Length: 325
Image: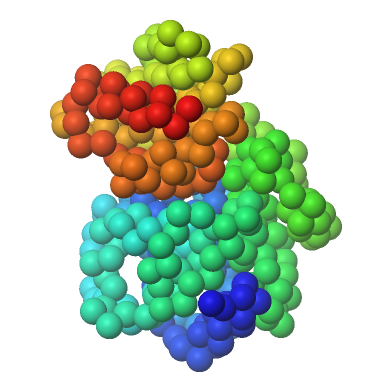
């Protein structure tokens, strides 16, 4: 099995030797997915390579300040004219997370899989995976160091965004000394940390406040008080004029209740499909929990889809959470 350093060098060689890349991240991209996509795009532009950045769906509006964010093609707005033979997947824990973007992978496509999720199943031709990295942005920080390119405020801001969001504002247990050393370098390049924290972690849209209020009205706790959950339906989203990105962070509210070990957000996708987002206080490995349902993620933050009605999904999931507790 290759070492992390060997995988970095293999990825570097791949980027130098080929051209015309497709860069994708997971559906409903978060801060790490968006910033990682753009960091790869920035590097390829520095190398004089051709590339296309693609995602199934839009990127969150609050991240439009990032370098060339408007160039990430939204697959929902139209198909690309062809397939790509050289594909770079960032922050995708498994191949299915790339969603419909895989339509534009050539049948013989060579895939570079850059990710930090411990549940990643190594689906790439090259797998640059570091499960103990705080974010995929941290891996890209290391990768960019292997190239002789001059860093600027654009790449620094992108990498900082990924690290900031995936560490919960540098509050989560994945905030390692290495993360803080990287952050120090990025701040020296001129990153405006306080402004990014305000934009990404503090500001809320009116739709976000409304859907949070609606979700909290559904709050329930287990008899033991160690599991708490909320739910959101498509009608709630319509009534609150909320976007998918407005749901980010809601799962932390049930999790933050004193004594709760696992917090859950149930989001109804349609009549017979529910997405469950899990957050753990540390006692339960929710990545392992999510894998039971075909999902994945991190030890303390993960998710999965359950093909059932909300009424049926809740007891099924709670029974599995109880087993893990």
